[in-house]
Amino acid sequence: MTRLFRSLLLVCTLLLVACAGTPERPDLARLYETDAQNGNQPPVILIHGLMGSTLVEKDTGKEFWPGGIGNLAFSEYRELARMKAAEAKGGGLVPGDLFYGVARTDFYGALVDTLETAGRFKRGTPGTPVTGDDRRRYYVLLYDWRKENLVAVRQLHELIDQIRRDYGDPDLPVDILAHSNGGLIANYYLRYGPKDVLTSDEFIPWDEGAHRIRRMVLLGTPSLGAVTSLERLQQGFKIAWRTVPVEVLVTFATPFEALPHPDAQVVYSTEGKPIPFDIYNADVWRVRRWSVFSPEVEARVLADAPDRQTGELNMAELQAYFVRHLARARQFQRALSAPVRANGVEVAVFGGDCTLTPARAVLDRDAGGERLVIRPEQVKARVEGVDYERLLLQPGDMLVPRDSQLGRGLPTVAGQPSAFFPLAQSFFLCETHDQLSVNAYFQNNLLQFLLGR
Image 1 (cartoon, one colour):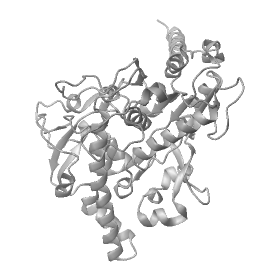
Image 2 (tube, helix red, strand yellow):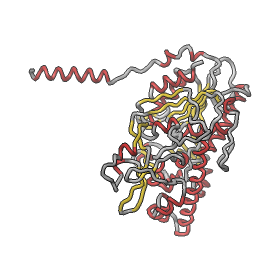
Image 3 (cartoon, one colour):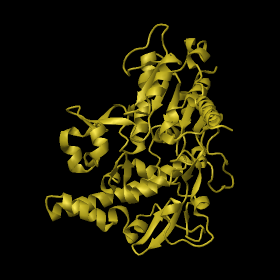
Image 4 (cartoon, one colour):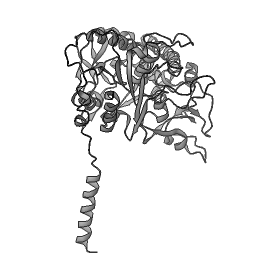
């Protein structure tokens, strides 16, 4: 075989691979042209995930999250901490709009475009009456993702009430499209409405969900939590080139509410054996000097304060946040797995399952003490013969394992339904967590689910 022939063969092969690697996208506008003319289509509420909305100063409108490429590259976002002193400045921070994307990375832009162009929905403004024949609207629930999800649940309740007033229909149901943490908000609302059921161990469901929600889409939702929250509460939250430090992160309630379900077996020994370990017990963290109880965090907080007395008060406040958030999060997770009265509400789960994703933790130990690790390469006290990759990782979307997205894996309780909630359908893609909403095949199946009569 001549060198010229080999070169031509190589070029042809590369061209064929390039063509094969560029899949065609479905023509969604054409596919749903007829369905998009349905004048009786219920309005859609889009609920974003953690960090999915901008945060702006209430009085000035100055954007603190994400705040541009410079902030993503250099900021530790200490201004986002929900400490009393920080919240008092400028009236605090409030949601601005969706965080559509940054640089060339899209989060919600393509999804919104699909709703508008293929679904023929217009973005609705709460408080503006919807009249005439053009009644197809979608609304965005913008919430402060640093606060308890119950705050957003109550906002959702008020939004649905307002939409009903705007449509002039007190019995109007809505469809909900919820991404990631937004799915926890929707799930709670379906079960309990705006009630706070976390103050007792008896989670009394309500019967209004089916009168308010027709169909509900959960996209990449950690229905049974995610062990990545364990990592974040120990090490901080990595964003772009920076890390939001622990002392900022623990002032948010949502990372705690995405911890693994308290009844799930997620902690193992270095020998690969399951061990009893209560991640919701603050003393477990305090004794091991993890998170806000660590010397490293204490040193940073004291150094950042104008004097030692203020620094010690700040440390006490941070630790009080931690204890309260853990206790509330335990109840939140248990409430979301209690028997549900769906009463005919159609629930669809969409997600990713092609990437090995942290699903368990190992209680590891080295000269620095004990810590929980969720990635095989991080295990120091390795035991020969233990396959840490198989032990720690399961198929998922890089952030949430498939089983958590489906609400599967809890111990079976006699007399209780085995299903987390009744599913009308589920659909999984080879896509990462933050790109699920962008995927054209998800959007195709989303429209099929929402627009189908």
